Length: 461
Image 1 (cartoon, rainbow, N blue to C red):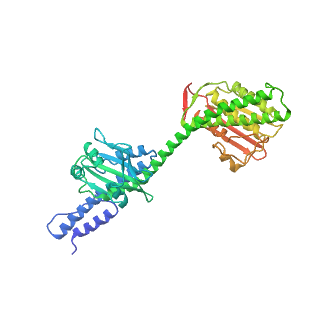
Image 2: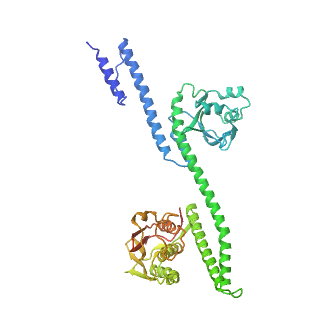
Image 3: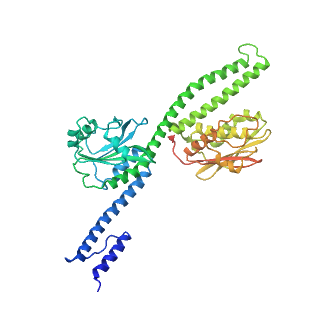
């Protein structure tokens, strides 16, 4: 007759196979079957512990992977892995671009003072870290004080011991086959890592390698973008004034302020004026894009009488429209409440939309500016009867430097930034912007601005 315990051991093994570890395993007795039961119980407890660790690790890694900025990722590592693995300090060092040295990138500790902080650097040649990086194998030092006595010239060990650290586990970081650095798990107690399996730490390091590399590259991108914004701001400032001076001088020469001007010279001066105007417009657009990207473009909102505002925007563009025999009309549908907006920034929106309508409209056509009440917001539209935009190209609109196959009907210049600026300003007001168009029939650009709101100053981000 089969021992009943064997059947229960079989059921327990099948349950553990399915990830259910809380099963009743009889262990009473002194025979071999009882000892088998005790071994099975211990196996279940060990598997449950490791399964729980892996669940925590997976959840922590998933949360960490959602981060982008490296410092945020590493701080999340520190918080998330507490309770999963033992440490009082975590440090990250990355290999410099020249491959000759390794530099501390981040560290966090329970110690009141840290002596190895960001930018602490040491050469790889002759360093014990070189072997770890080259072999991909971790290193455990369970008694750093003894290690320091044996290696008295090790500056990094001297510093870490001064922090109160007594044992450490160093894991190599390898992302996509590239050796990028090392991660240090350290404890204020000696022998912390003596009986631990390094596989778990290596798995953590392996998963973190890609996350760390992603975070590092993203942070570098942010820093480069900030540098680009600063350079662009300086370049625009240095170019705008000379261009304005050249344009003004050309106008004065063409007006005869410096003496008679022949017909051929007048045409040349006109080209200089137009080129300078185009460059100044481009620079002003770049200034706005730079300000928007860096978060330095402010909104000063106030209630605005919409019919009067739209009429003033139309008047600013009438002269340009007359050159192409285009008439701009205004239609206000019923009573329109006052939107709360920044009139200067919204004037920029209207100028871009109306000037675009003029550029892409055929001579001797009409442009219609309309406004209507939509409850909690007002809707404004600019309708032209020009060449229109192909349906598959509408998605390109409102993106910086993006152009469609439509071309200005009189060869006017375009920076490719105007609609991108329009979108950001409108959305910063809490509104929406979109376009409908049909080839050969024209286009309509719409935007909305909320009516309710308080007069305030905000930054576009």
